[in-house]
Amino acid sequence: MIISDRLSIAEAMLHLDGDKFSLRDYPFYHAYYRGNWRSTLLMCGRQVGKSVSAAGFSIVDCVAQPHFKTFYISPSLKQTSTFSNTRVGKMLRHSPRLKPFVSGNTDNVFLKILANGSELLFSYATDNPDRARGVSADRVVYDEVQNIVYSEVVPVINECLANSPYGYVSYMGTPLTMENTIQYLWDTSTKTEWVIKCENCGKRSFYRDTKGIGKEGLICLHCGKYVNPRNGVWVDMSPDEQRDPSVLPKIKGFHVPQIILPANTEDPTRWARIINKMETYTEAKFKNEVLGISDSLGTRLLGLEDLEKGCLDYRIPDTPGVLVTGGVDWSGGGSKGKSRTVAWVFSSSPNSNEFRTTWFKIYPDSNPVDVVEDIAKNFLQSRVQLVIGDAGEGALANSLLQRHLGTIQLYQLQYCSSSTPLKWNNADRYMGDKTTLIDNYMMQLKKGHVVFPHIGLMSQVFKDMLALYEETTATGKKIWTHSPVMPDDSFHAQVFCWVAQKVLRRDLSFY
Image 1 (tube, rainbow, N blue to C red):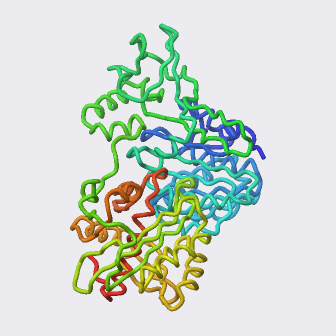
Image 2: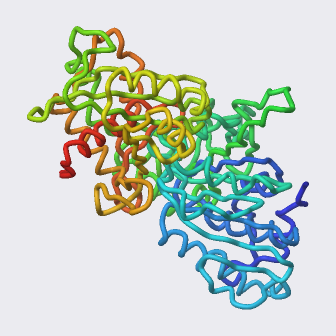
Image 3: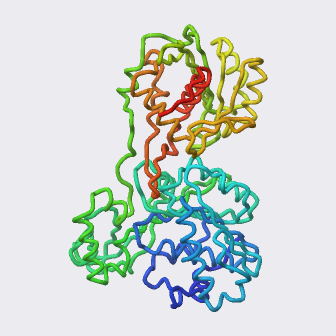
């Protein structure tokens, strides 16, 4: 199903801060409003009209099509409340031509229902999608998507679109690191750039670095003369050339840096601010917030040398110790199909802080249910006494594994965000604060308490472990995440196995 030209509806019906809504000074958003791509991405610098456009876009969808449902997601309650109240709410209240559509109270932060039956829903998620489960929608809008963990959140929330005849997804945000969610989305997009024609030499330029920033405005990269951003057109730098109709097309990805805004190039005061930022910001901050491009890598606690120091010259399976536990990270289909099931076994002695790897296996491209029997066989041969399995995607697989293990106890562990590192939920699983557990296991690795077999066996495992890096969200929360194209399953299988060691020892102390 197709929704008609949103731009005409927006400019005819919406008001913003007392004036009629207009994209006259934002010509690059015309295509965004007029297109009907299933998936779009706005990869933007700061203060380029992104949130206003998202609000107008969301309202127009709901006005144009009765019973349409838009679901907005940001990383935090504060960001969602601000968007709902000061963007969408104000437009609904202060746009005279929207009055026939506004029924009842539009002050509800999380739900606004229009008279034509359309709904605007609002929620938030950073690394846990549970708050947004169970909603049905026709479009999901992810704002500040750079602060949302792709593998944990996006595939789950996108299931909200499963029964929609539209199935639209809109991503938008400001870049951070080269491994971040928004960079992953950009890499899988059409990489569409605003290409500006020079009136002097007739050649065209687009801008991803500081080379085009002149003292008084944007300059042609070919002849050095000043150019007018209004003379731009969108050009796909990575066109969607897929021919198989069963394969979903690429994300339509628009790059919107501050330097292509006519309001910035036509106002000397505003352009002077950009020059000042170039002189005072760090290189990474200027790239992110002004140029709208990613820079640098995420912070890692461990390097390859740290991991290789833990390798000893032995093979697996190895002789079990006194205390033997198993851990399983079940495949959840994340990382665009790159998620795999990984099983791990640690052996230790009661009075030792050393955790020795006595068996592990990576199961690529497999359904968790299909590998249960092989995991159980190897756990039994390793003489495990306790197993912890990932509860996130493995409820059925954990249940089947427990049947094969017989009297050997299997507990489920679900990652969450909690002030308590690990606690039993009085029903069927442990709830573990993801950041705390990873922090603590990282310290075990850093101190050399984890022993791995011969280095020749560890190549893929170490790649998984080095995929994990640390970021700080916009709210100041520290999280562990990984590039959506780099699986980290081997690391989490070890965490579950190490937690099983803690449970077996009845030592639930954490840093």
